Length: 57
Image (tube, rainbow, N blue to C red; front, top):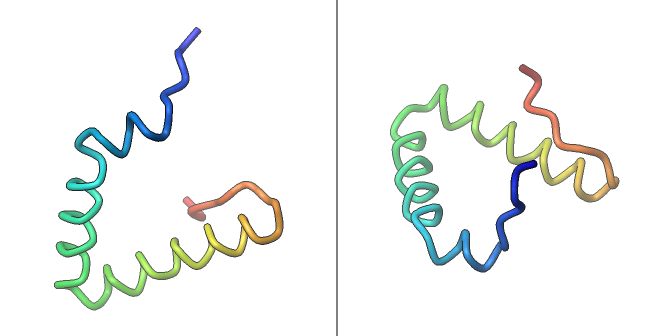
């Protein structure tokens, strides 16, 4: 059984820097930035509706 990680532990780790690096890298490419924005939109829509997020993959 895999242990669940506390969100506070995650935010004090490398995740925030990796997210920022990824977002900035994606924003350099228009096609990737549109795809990234769509993923974020779907996640927000799913969270607002209580559904599980789907990346469409």
